Image (cartoon, rainbow, N blue to C red; front, side):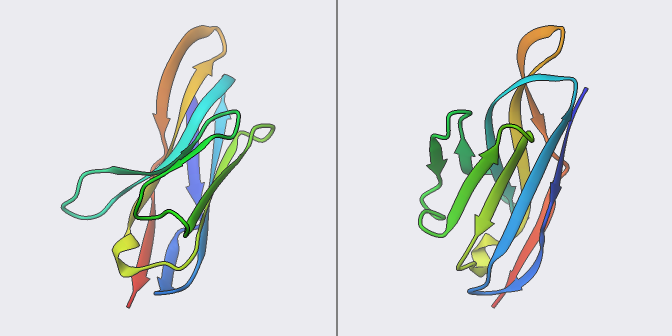
Length: 121
């Protein structure tokens, strides 16, 4: 199996910064795209940012210029640096990854358990 574990959420004042990290572990042969999603109460889960294995990034319009996604392929990790945070960024943040497991030649999508980010006004 494959596990994704997020870290780094918390409470911050508006205008502040937080860094999230996500580590993938298990019987991993290869990881393709990795990303961060978020879900606020009463809302659908939405894409925040994604990055391909080659480093091509994509951002939601609401976070462009404020958030930066990066990854370390050697360590199977993805990061999200969040600056100039706003109360509307409050949500549970989930990482995900497209993974090929050892001896299982098919792409599968895995999710972390989520980490709470709360931005106070």
